[in-house]
Image (cartoon, rainbow, N blue to C red; front, side, top):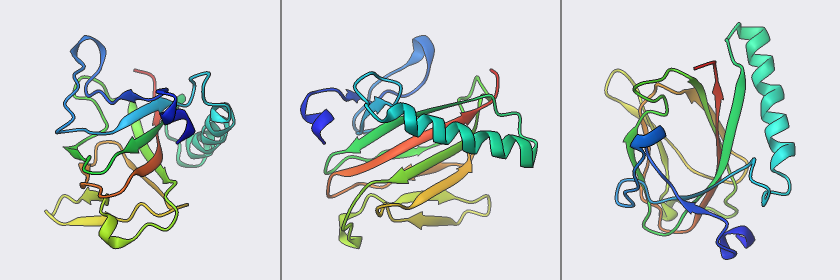
Amino acid sequence: MTLDATNAFSIARMGRGGSTTTDVASRGDRTLWLDNVACVNGGEFLAALHTLSQQLRANLRMPIHGVEAHYALYPPGARYVRHKDRMQDSGARMISWVTYLNADWQPADGGLLRLYSDDGGHTDIAPTMGTSVCFLSDIEHEVLASHQTRLSIAGWMRRLD
């Protein structure tokens, strides 16, 4: 919250390369990448995520070669429409991962992560403090509208692009 108060966060973008856009109606969060110098503990967290990725690489034989992560802050009313984290023109993102930083989150606060299954169903996960979720990056998901400020760290384990 201190970093957000100093305007360190940026409006989140969708897409990659020259085709990125901002559309706060579709994606209303603000982000700060953990490799930014403003993130004092970002390097430690990225190192821990890297260790986890190497364990997945060794134990599940996944070709993971890197990690990326950012803080995400959803102000009240913000959401992120149904999407996949794997870009249409790149299969680099393999594993998506999120950890929630919201103390005292209540059901009425909204902001659920909704993961869609191939059979048309879905699973909702509340963004409560300390909950972590890991899923394949080509699974469709969305963040439902939040009624309180919603905080998380989202990351991706990547293979070579």
